[in-house]
Length: 417
Image (cartoon, rainbow, N blue to C red; front, side):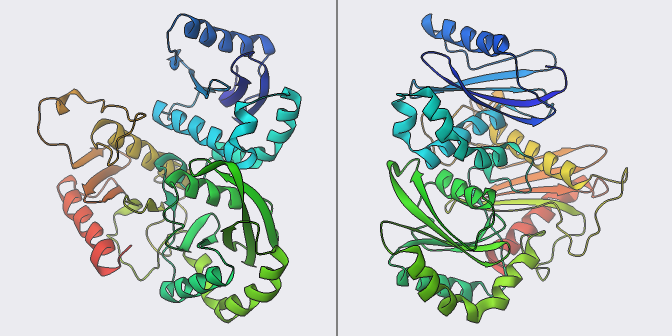
């Protein structure tokens, strides 16, 4: 495992036959004996009514997870900042990505492993995009990355009319994997479905139009829908989720140009706010380097590590690089939600908070912060919103709370998200 960063293995649960492996970093194909040993120890524990979910050595973490007693995923990671929370989310996302592309029946009722291997090749672009270090964070948060573009009301009105004309209730406008606007019923889909649909569109090779069968992992895991996508300009697609009708040709030739050609400039403007996720006209404190704002009731988020408009990329050795900022914000989010902030919605998969001080108190933490020599972070939990900020280390610690409060007010009152 020398040089390993992250390796994802998929096997059949019953027989332990390897189905595929995907990698991040310098990871190479593991020997079959290693794969067999990793699966064997998990199967042995299961036979003894012991659930083995994770273990670690000095340098490597290994996690196991089985789905429907049919498919098992094993992830091996040597990354220091790869938390159990992230790795479990990764495995859950990967399985539901497989469901989205080939359907649950093919994964639960495996009749021919070789055929399953062939079918799952269609999942590789989406799975690989979940493995790669991304400018988005929806895979970890289980919400969809959004952008606050100019002319949102105009784009929303056009999208609603376009989707109605296409005899559907489900549609969105996507700019490089982030949603600009969406219909009301699109937001009613399960959070993971909305997130995976946008990642799927971003992971596929660019096309002027596309008719792609998809299964909704939570809403329709066995009956496919059609995902129609139309490229308005490079990097911006309008998506329609529909049934057998209308035809791709009809929507492309009769509707796309009629509805979207008059809005060509507002559509292009969606790309100009990508790096910051919101317009330069929305001011932030100069000490803020990165921002993660989650709107929990709608499963939406804003995420940026270039919070200051016109900021030049940091020079080598001077401050945090952009990948380091993303890593810090992801780690701080994980710390807050696993230790201090209870989830809004409880289900059978919800784990208890790790901090013991919560026991015996009638209240939960609503704020937390960290301070180091290279950065500071502050998190604020309010009604239906969570805000996570990354600061320069020179910002006084005593001012973090007031800056975070003003920033949250900006996105709730001054420029509502």
